[in-house]
Length: 194
Image (cartoon, rainbow, N blue to C red; front, side, top):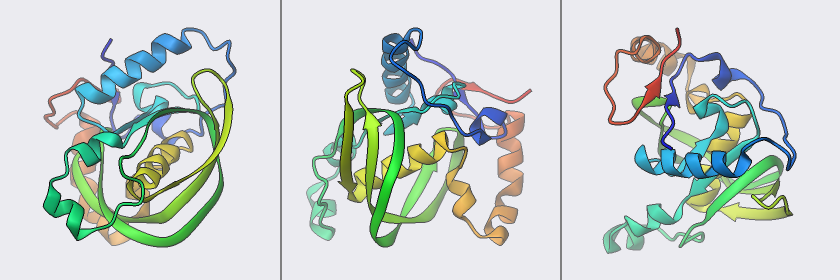
């Protein structure tokens, strides 16, 4: 089932999400719905707070980023994480970030029509559980690390716009207010703050 994406301004996006255990009700269906919602919204990642759930769960499919790249784009950069990952992350916690910070033009399904260059670490090591509740500690690099860090921020109550300068945020205030009020047109279902 395709779920509505929670829009900027909704309080759930600013709360630190809670760990869950394997008895969380309807977890398999929730994960299935998150994949379906993410793909229907043309996203590459989706965190539970973005669908109104304050739990430490997100899904990432960075494989589609590489699948949509042309040969010219691949030659311009080296992508150590190609072909990417398609994965569920439950109760993720960062163990370590490393490498140089690098800029990439990010957007967010909860903040439509706004994209900005954001600096993030080249790599991240996470401790997390998969959908079977097996624990993993794994290091991710490149674009995959970026997508993971973006989604991880959601479960920590942070948004990509928090990395912008105060001046840049001030310049975006009207657009952000319009999103909160529902004055934005997107081709996916959204839930706006009341």
